[in-house]
Length: 368
Image 1 (cartoon, rainbow, N blue to C red):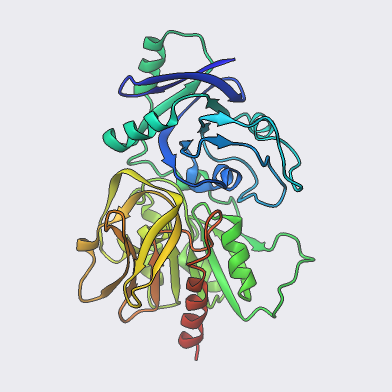
Image 2 (image 1 turned 90 degrees about the horizontal axis):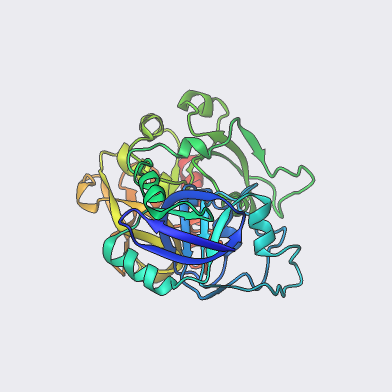
């Protein structure tokens, strides 16, 4: 069946329907990962986004029950060049098309994703619509242009947990080593792989809703605070910024992605929106203290402005080698550090897993 992709600037593409029939609206971005579409679709950081995969053939290894990053698909839609109806992987239990239909997610295939990617790179990420409707382009474009933009919206509130819970969810699972530290995780859209990584490092985890007060978290007596990844604009998440301000210095804090931005805002920095964001599993980042280069997994449209960080209080630790934007910092006197990317690397290389070990060291030093 025919499907169409329409952008707010009037650009449109015609292709074939993938997944569910219907209409979906969101911010159109491109992701440069060669694989990992299952993790990308279920990552809450992609909430409200229509994800364009730049790799040409998608779907060839299907979907399996192990690589979910949440309980459902959060991406608003999927845009690809060629869909593989043939699934070849020993763990696969269903096809990508079946998976999208199961969660009523609209997608489109057989469009020129190279042309779309160049357009987004040159003109910036923008709102778009994938639809199987036969309505006229003028009517669809009017509806699209009337939709709410991403900037200024608190969409982390739409993906956070409704109530706190312990990890792992399966109480029969035990770590290879006894739990040494209790870590309170602020859920702004946390991925299962993040929780797995902390758990594998011997942490007992309790995941809290984004609006949880500092007093409630501290009442659990955690050894450290983790600020998770999440979608959207960090500035409207004002309640979390205020909470982090009150937590600074009381417990070691480790933030990633949206949590990194919230920590930056809590320290008095400013954030801004990138032209087309960083989305992919192959972004080079330099670790300034060692000079080492990490290949990282990223998904964000906003950044902390490096020049706005308080210079006497904060040390810049990581820089993006593609555009020299800020990728990480640490406070010089307080036990707080963060990175803009996803150190658990799902999908992606594991160059950044050392950051979890650094968090463990921070908690050990703080409680020594």
